[in-house]
Amino acid sequence: MGTSRPFVSENKDINKLVQWVIRHFAPINNAYGTSLREMSSGKSGSRDSLQRNDEIRYRKYEDQHGKFLQPVIMVDNLDYPLPAIKAGNGQIRFLDKATVWDDLQVPISALRLGGAAPADAEAYKDSIVLSFDDGADEWIYFTAQLPHSYQQGSDIEFHIHWTPKVNGAGVGAENVKWDFTYSWANIGDSFPASSPLTVTTDVQDVSADEHILSEVGDLAGTNKGMSSMLLCSLKRDTAVANNYTDEAYVVAIDFHFKKDTIGSDLELDK
Image 1 (tube, rainbow, N blue to C red):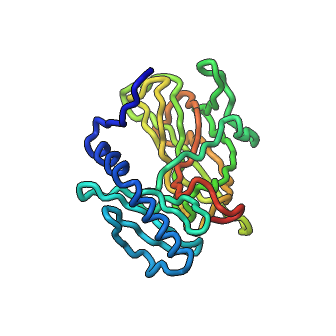
Image 2: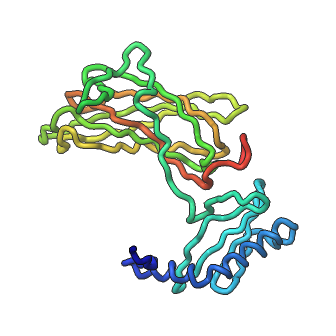
Image 3: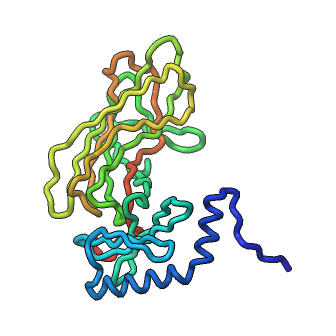
């Protein structure tokens, strides 16, 4: 029978953190219980106050969605923010430095290839990609819905994952330009006129089959919420100066977004 051993990390800071959590597990529970009871009974004090319990600092935060407690573990004068807990139902929320990024993926198979000049579905590496020709502009169309984990009101970023069909010649600019448009609306709002973003990538020193990530730009998320919808189009603009004279294969497209919850405690809000 094997012998169980405590977790040991090669990273001294992480190891100290683990040892501290094990040693102070009881005080952490006490801090949670006391603070959540105070918050639930309306005795939480001023908004955004920082308090100390043994070696724990905890932030009491209140907004239109409720009251939250965010523990911050202190190790060697370094802050380790933990997810916040919502009073009343225990919902987890990531505040400030604790927010994380994730991908909102749009599968290639979900793209619409309609219109006058659609991109072509083409066999590649025993799979299927979307091929954009060099001789004429071609489009794809798609939609996306912001998930319940989205940090409402934050900006999102649009990316294209793609690869050139052949090597760049390496003797001068060979540009691939992407034109992206979007219309973004909350539930109950009207879809506005579309807004454009563009990005140009020089592939003169890029090899065929190299995975390229083109960061097209940020979409302002002011007042946008979960389950809001994006209506989008993407075109290869072959009128760009020094246009790359071969096909560009789109492998995937996605939006990077910030998430501050695992989901939502309400069906249509959080």
